[in-house]
Every structure is written in structure tokens, then in C-alpha cells.
Length: 246
Image (cartoon, rainbow, N blue to C red; front, side):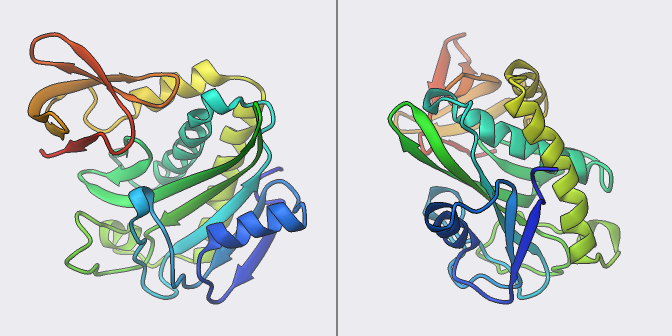
């Protein structure tokens, strides 16, 4: 087992991603080491957003990886594999789990997990990668400023053991990571695309050029979202360049 080869628990920390990056840099921590916390005072999400989580209720952890076979140009494949690992696990518990591009995980129309991948790159290789994951497990209510959030407990009515959840999730993440290092990129990409939230549905988007209608058709090699507009034009959007409206 790679992911989950070592666990480090901290009752409270600023950010598990920052802790993991420090361990990877200074201690060359074993690949697959997981740093998890009961609370993060400075947890981060995509686009610089803060990750909100009630103390002791959810999974907050980061994984140290050394995906040396992945080129910087293809680094989004790491995000794809991690996203799939989470959806694989959640689908054993709940239905209608999808990946909202680039790497939020939705249960129905509500966000249940978020991912922040931070890669350290030197030249033409990835030196290390830190995969930060927040999974809503036992939290019953979320602040009003956190849109469309849901937890496993809210969906099932059951209380979950966080340690058991982390162990189970690690198994599915490990399978996907081994698929990645085996070079099965095409299989990962195809499954990621087929799991996309609102794939091939007509959606109202907003970009720098204004609002428009289109449908998600794929994701390119660099991780850009490919959207077909109403006039049949296919446009590629990088992170922060497009927003779902409804």
C-alpha cells in the first residue's frame, strides 16, 4: 500500500497541506504519508478560498506523493486520479456522486468534498505533490456563506467513525494512484470525464466575455474544461476562467 503507508494526526493545525509540503521538503517523508487533523485554522480550498469545517466532524487531510512519472504538462492527471478515488469510496455509501470540474465532489447538487493539489516542480519533472482533501462527514449545518454543502450524515442520517472513513477512503485512493503510476492515464481520464457533474447538459456559464449557454463535453490534457457553445464552437477554459451559474 502506498497511500496510507503512514498516518500522522494533529489535533489542530494551520493547514495539513502546509504541514505535508514541509515534511516532503525537509524530511523526505515516505510516499503515501497522510497528515490528518481534527481542525484547521487556515484550511485552504480552490481559488484561494478558505475551507470551512466544524472541529472534529469531518475528514481534513493531506497526502504526500512523489509522482515522478508524471510530466508537469500532464499534472492534472493527479487531480483526476484523486477525484476518482474519492468518488469510488463515496459511491459505496451514497448515490449520485459526481465530480464538479476541476475537483470538487458533489452528492446530487451539493458539495461534499473538495481537493487542493499542490505540485512542486523542478525543470521538467514533478518533485513532489501534496493532495489536500476535505470530506464532509458528520457536520449537520454549514455557515450561510458556504453554498450548497452537504455531509454523509445529512444524507444518510448516520454518524460515521472518522478513523474508519479515512482508512476506507485511503484504500480507494491508493488503487487510483497505483493506476496513475502504472501509466493508465487514458483510463483515468475517460472515467473522470464520464463522472463529471452535468456532463453534456445545457448550462448557463459566466466568463470574462460575459454570460453564455453551453454544454461540457470533455477536459483537455492540461485540465482545461471543454465547452461547446450554442453556435457549435468548442472553447477551452482554465481554472478561474469560467463559472457555473445554473
